[in-house]
Image (tube, rainbow, N blue to C red; front, side, top):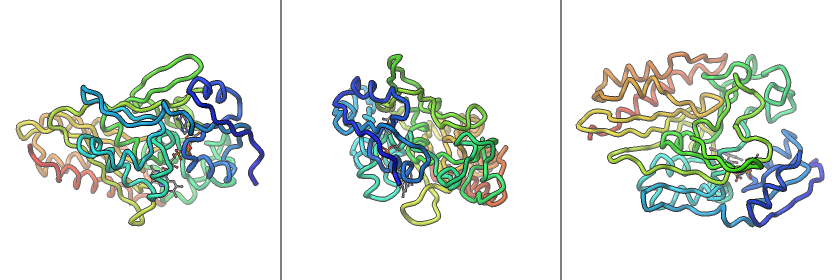
Length: 325
Ligand SMILES: Cc1cc2nc3c(=O)[nH]c(=O)nc-3n(C[C@H](O)[C@H](O)[C@H](O)COP(=O)(O)OP(=O)(O)OC[C@H]3O[C@@H](n4cnc5c(N)ncnc54)[C@H](O)[C@@H]3O)c2cc1C
């Protein structure tokens, strides 16, 4: 049974900040993850701070210089279908359209999608696991078919968001505000790996919240996309996915950002593969080397070894589909 909590609906960011300062306060955006966490006893809340009345957090806009600005309360469905996002930021619209189900996309927001808690069944279940401050990651020797092959160690969760890897491929920044003021950081630096702290997923400090996301105008000629592999045709998290943003010039790769989903505790960028590609022609030999480099250092667990060839296949399929100009 849910414990009793206070429910407040501030009308401005400054009012919200006063409310989330307190211990046990949790932000409620669409509630599609928060309510599940409360019901599953992942954490308890003394106060739920609804953002629903804060209009300044809504909206999707393209600035005159082509920069995309998303308010934290922009819904996943709005982002998936926004004409400018579909045309210029394909990786983001594709990732958004592949999140969960239509009902969840209508209700869920970008802020909540980036800050959602992991889906590991031990973390969501009645286990005092590492992520809850315990000393055991039960997935390491347990049911780990959907867990990570990179960056784990003390905790082998996978980061659940499809939109975060797409946004990182597009070089997005996240706008944060808290008691000490506002800051803007690359989304890539927003996530925390278990080697640093296995009990948190983001760098948000107590009392901080996400205001929105900024995506720079794509460079001329950049093509982006998001490919997601899941166990079922719909309504499922990624077993593995690949977001790409690749710029071709005169038949060669002029720029590349590749980010995997579903394989690590944070969106997993592939800098060594990106470096391998830049300046080269995307021919079959290079793509084969890129696929091998993408899984170098993978550490599969007892039941998720299939993710290694899956990632190789994603790299081959996605890079093989990029036109030479
Ligand atoms: C059945 C199911 C299937 C799903 N499948 C997918 C999937 O395939 N891909 C995928 O990416 N996701 C998937 N999800 C997750 C879903 O996308 C998230 O639940 C949703 O995006 C969360 O958004 P929300 O607005 O409802 O967040 P909420 O539930 O309101 O909040 C989620 C968390 O973020 C915090 N939070 C919310 N807004 C802010 C903010 N502005 N600043 C700081 N913290 C904030 C909350 O306190 C809470 O901890 C699935 C969820 C379900 C239930």
